[in-house]
Image (cartoon, rainbow, N blue to C red; front, top):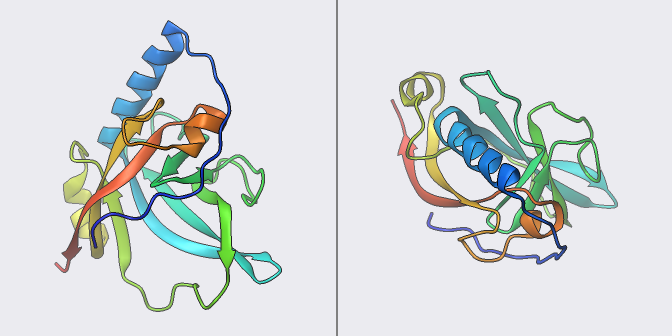
Length: 168
């Protein structure tokens, strides 16, 4: 597994002030060190369509998780809007949908995503087995290219970097 394709472009203008920029950096460092993507799945959103769902876990637990973000060009939110059914439950649902052609996860291994500065790697190794990946925060504006979540909502952009199989 290498990189996922970037797709779907959405545009909106946002104003950045110095306090907002500082809080984004502080929040970004916290996410880098404490937050992991611990599950990836899909949900049925009707009319033979599915949305992707990413579950985040804050291993420190001292801050609230972000309202949303973009991952490899897809916008994910946990605010109870669009395809997201319950706000603030740690399950981020994609704004984008796809035709349900048996995309539901069947017997897949757990997929874990962390940044290279994640501080709880030992806890992950004991709790989760499957595919372990690192992700990179690209910020907002994005240093990784197109980012619909940044363009529409001012949220950070992330991208998947490297993956490995975690067996033991």
